[in-house]
Image (tube, rainbow, N blue to C red; front, side, top):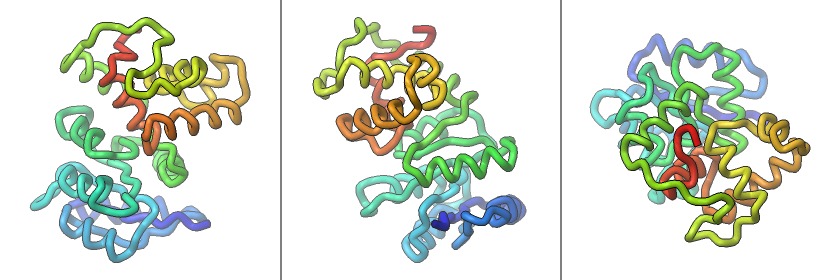
Length: 225
């Protein structure tokens, strides 16, 4: 199956570079480009891509506003949006995750990392680069610093999580991949994938990124915890 990608960035050179990297892969196809948020929304409605690569800062309607339109309840079904930007974690990035971004990647990643991120996002798994995950944790701590909850207490609003699912949620919230979780718990990756899918369904989360945000909002994970 070909993964259809739309590239939204206000710099033509960046769009051209991303297109070159993506179209070198047999399973990826760039179906459209946009130079601002309004155009990104129009092109998504026209082309219906599987993944949108979206810059945060763009003229006119910025990336965050466009993201809210693309990943929120206003578009059915919402589109998977991978934020690709020069800017490390700041208010823009925090707002992007709040608005429903499926992932966040910095523009200094290697081409193969970008390609892998697009494929991961297309599978509905979502991702945040490790460097950004660490900064995201610090941002949550700065904003709220909620008191720790005794493990393995289920989420108050979602008592259906099993003890194992709760354990895996905590590891997901700390930025571990399925392979790293499998190694930590000494189980198979397929088992981890099944648990992750179950907990996302129970929590009503579209992907891992939303689960990370939810875990920190409920005080289930704290920096250094």
